[in-house]
Length: 345
Ligand code: SF4
Image (cartoon, rainbow, N blue to C red; front, top):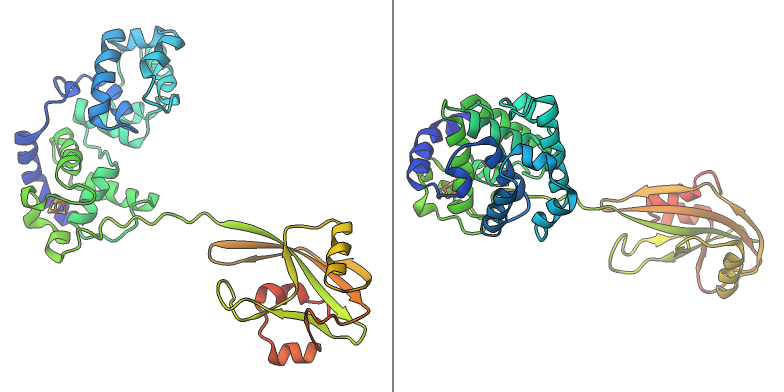
C-alpha cells in the first residue's frame, strides 16, 4: 500500500494544482474558514453548503463573533443543515479558542483535536491545509480512492481499516501535506466517484490496481455490521405420564428447517396464559415448573428462551411423543433446544 500511495503523490499534486475547484473557503487558508466549511460538509453536499457558508460568514465572520452569538441566531443560520449539535459544538469550540487559546486559532493537530466537534478528520484537514502539518485527513472519499488505488479489500467501514490507511498515508505524506490531502479528497469527489469512477480522467490511472484488475465496481468493500435481532421464546419440555417427550418438526424452509424442536411460542407468557396455551394444545398439565433461562446465538439472531417443564396426563395428537432414547438416536434436535433439555430429563 505504501509504495503505491507514495508513487501517487507527485501526479496527484500536479493534478490538484491544475484542477482544484475554486471553492469559497479555498480563497485563503484561514483556519476559521476551513473549519466552518469542513463542519458544514460533514453531512451535506458541497452545492448545498455554498449558500449556508456565505450567510454564516456574513453574520459571524470570525471566532470572536461565533463565540458570542446567541443560540437562536446560530441555530437560525444552521436551519436546514440538520445535525444541530454541530452548530452548538462550533460555538463551544469558539468559546474555548477565546478562553484557552487567547483568541488565536490552534495551529497543531494535537490542539485542534481537543476542540468540541473536531474529530481526527477535521483536525487533520485544518492542520494540513492551514498549517501544512504532515498529518492525514481520512474521510470516506479518501478511503474509496486508497482502496481502489491499492486494490485493498479491507472493509472501509471498520475503524481498523481507517487506522491502517491513516498510518500508511502518514508515512508517505509529502511536504505539501495540505495539497496532498485535499487532492485525495477532490479526486474522490470529482473523479473516483462511488458508482462510476471516471478512470479515463484520473491522473492515478497508470498506478491504479483496481483499474488494472477490473475491480473498480467491487471496491471499496463496505460491509455493514448486521444488527442482531433478539427473539423471546417460551419453550416447553412436555413430559407425558409414560415418560415420553413432545417434539414437532420445524417448517421445511427458514432457520433450522426440517429439524425437530421442542414446542415453543414467540414471546413470554404469564402463568394464566401458559395454562390457556396448554389447554389449546389439548394437554392437561399436572405440574409446571420453571427451567433456567437459556440464550442461543445464531449468526444474526439471538433466541432468549424461557423454559417450562410440564408433566401432562395425555399425549395429544398435536405433537410427536418420543422417548428420551428415541429422541437422542433418531430426531435431529438443534443445539438451542438441547440446551433447554440439559439436566432436565
Ligand atoms: S483509476 Fe479509476 S478507480 Fe483508480 S483511482 Fe482513478 S478513478 Fe479511482
